[in-house]
Amino acid sequence: MTRFARLVPLALLALAACTTVSPEAKVRAKLIEAGVKPPVASCMAERLVDRLSLAQLKRLQSLSGLARKDVNAMSIDEIAHRLRGLNDPEITAVVLKAGIGCSIAF
Image 1 (tube, rainbow, N blue to C red):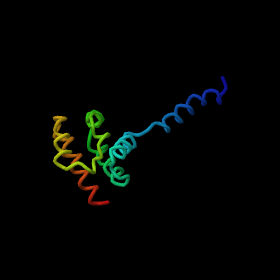
Image 2: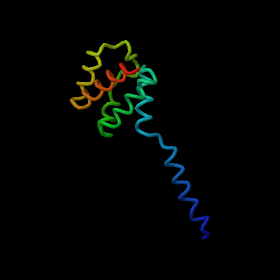
Image 3: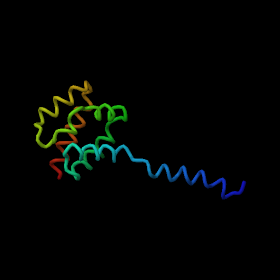
Image 4: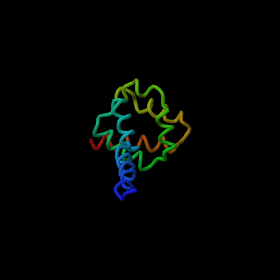
């Protein structure tokens, strides 16, 4: 097998890794789908990915109904109530802090 032939599988693996969507990009996309403005969604996604585990992010994704309802039309109390339903105080705190901080910044 030539040296070039051995490098092809490695190059394909590297290329596949580059095309994989990052957790931050997934979170940003979901926030935008839920009605969050893109700059706020980018800010929040960065903070959420930095502060929550992948398991917590998956639990957060499980919130039903948020994608069908414009979060801009929801009160903070309603959002907090839905977050508390996940029974993870860290998720609630991180999402609310990120949402408020990023909304003020943008």
